[in-house]
Length: 335
Image (cartoon, rainbow, N blue to C red; front, side, top):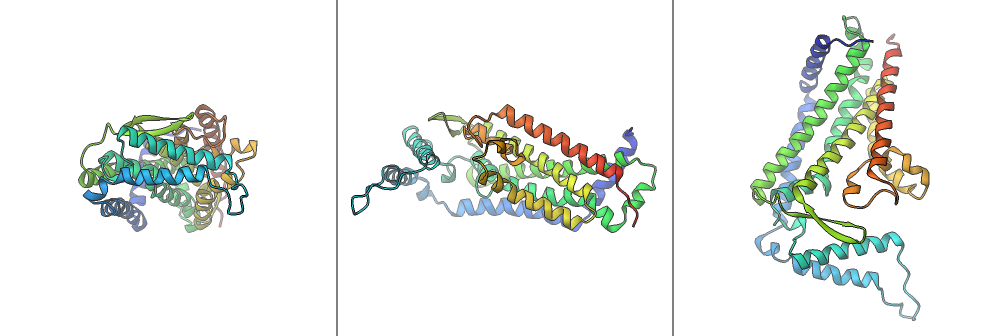
């Protein structure tokens, strides 16, 4: 099996022209830009100069409520209050410790609007709305249809009669998918920087980002954390794009491939969380994604490590590519 660079280059350019010539692709790009602008407008409109200085008062009120939740009073009949679960107590203690650190060290929350453009970049990458998930959604739509649509429309025959091997065709389509995904991710990053700078000021690179790990709060660079968030998001994007590409190679119907890909995107993490108590879930794909958990000191399960998750994801990635390659090489294009 050999793949020529010149045939691959010609096919790659051809796939780029086809992809970006579609109205749907242009709509996705426009929607992403509008979502960034909308997120910036909502963040800015939710604040004003007076509100920016009230974050201490808000956190103080939150802490009072958290203390009550951690030590609830007994019932009216004298019966003891229901005990919190270990997870609930850990979550409340985490929030309380971070609030107290902010008050003691004069570190305003990300949504206070004081942190500058890097705070906005962080909000769009790991808070709600998480726009990296929107990039993933658009990429799955493209990846799940890029091969399957050729079969459903019958145009795959036009490709196979040309002097290109199946491996070269598949690689060109996969490279096009990854280029689209990375292009959207870079576009999101740059537009978030621009929107954050225009709305909140071109600063904040050295703003601290707080992490609660091993029972204590640690301050890290906001810039470094934003880079880690985009790196972790890019890794998830690579895995899900490859999975969607596998489905595209396996199904003749592009709607079937896209539907299944979107189902896995939304249902996969939820199913993994529901089965979290079982040891074997450590080897499930969605339990090892979102490696930014490790940067925040909150792995999917206690005992899991970053190197373990990266190894598991690497195995899945190789299997996805191998299966997609095998299926496409053996597919019958008759009918």
